[in-house]
Length: 562
Image 1: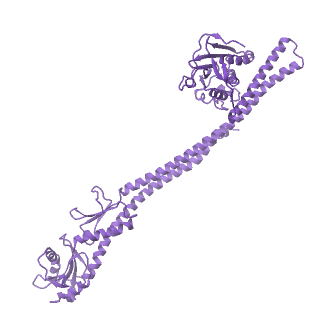
Image 2 (image 1 turned 120 degrees about the vertical axis):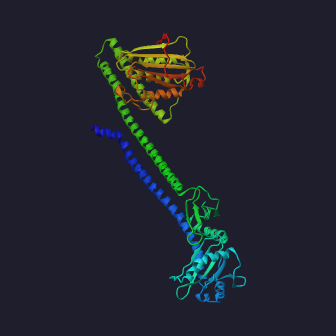
Image 3 (image 1 turned 180 degrees about the vertical axis):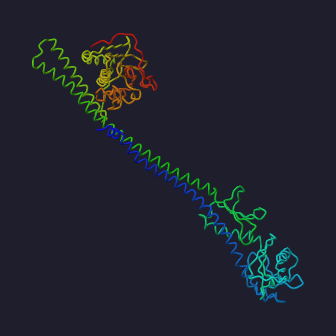
């Protein structure tokens, strides 16, 4: 397999993650631009709704006055001949007009100011007006039309005119023409400002708000101000620092402005808030999906790693099994064929067979114990035992292997220390054996192993130190994992089952203790099992935060041999 293929195989999960992540990222980018566009569109749409609302209000006001004025003020020109003005009362009587102070007609005559008559609804007749603000406003409003009559000016077609020089007496005028298109008079109405403010505006706004906004309680505030900026009408107290849309009225009250504020936020703020909310949801969904993909990727990577580790385990165990079996077979054949007759040689070969048998037995024990641990069926039988004696027994089983492989072993223990603990002899002996086996396997060219057992407060510490190839710092927390094999340097080149240290860790934890490692690449490793002493409280023996490094060895007696 080429290097490129190997590289791809090692990273194919990440490639799959990127293939899944990039469409998600593209979706989020497109979502961002779509939401940004939607934000601008929403802002424009909200402003358009507010403007359309104001347009509808002013249109309703126009319809409230315009058609009514056209019908009411459509007085026949025949009524404007001499002594016929009173007949206009019949026209006004048929009209039902709201929001009007007074209806009137004015006939222009030569060489005088003309005749002015106000309609009296109580008597249903036309009467000369008494001196009043309305009468003065009518006289001022009709003055231009009287000048047109005096000068004989003709107009094409009459249209309603609005006179608003007196803000309290706004007048709608309809010029009356004779057969020659000359203005012979005016019919008009003086509007009631209070009725417009107190009745027409509230009714119109109340009717239109539900049509443009969702419900009446939307927070929409409509206000109207006059030509001096004084507030004349408001659905709620308005804010002087904000209005979202405003415009003047288009037919009457043209110097008044109507304004609307849409809820608690401006269209811009609402659009930005909507954008932030939707983008936040999209990002949250993207993060969650990314997290799910990452967890799935990590799980798949762990499963693949575990699968590789199991494959390596089978390969390494096969090798570990073949090595002692081959030695046993060779020495057994030599003895069986009688090729070795010297008693010392027979004894030496027998020791080889015994050592390799113990090695083979230990490997099988590790596999069987690991299977029980994985199945949750591992049990321990505890008794009070001297850790020093248990360590001596383990060293005795290793003596032949160490001697044949040229290792120098030192074992130190302080004199007179009580090293008793409540332990499972077989399990702890197996843990010591695994640490010694690990030290032999990873000593490299060094041929020295130091073993120590001593009391440290309420704990008993057993340490095994080699002077070999060491363990990188970033691998030291992983070496107690099942099947784990250090992937760099000379460490990776040493064969092993990958179960020994995992079993040591489990055994130490089952005894209420722990196993630690202190190592530097090229300078060896020190593994220490820390167990609670028999006369120590368990809580004190397993205090959190105790130093992981092995204490320096004190001068003392060498460990006795069994």
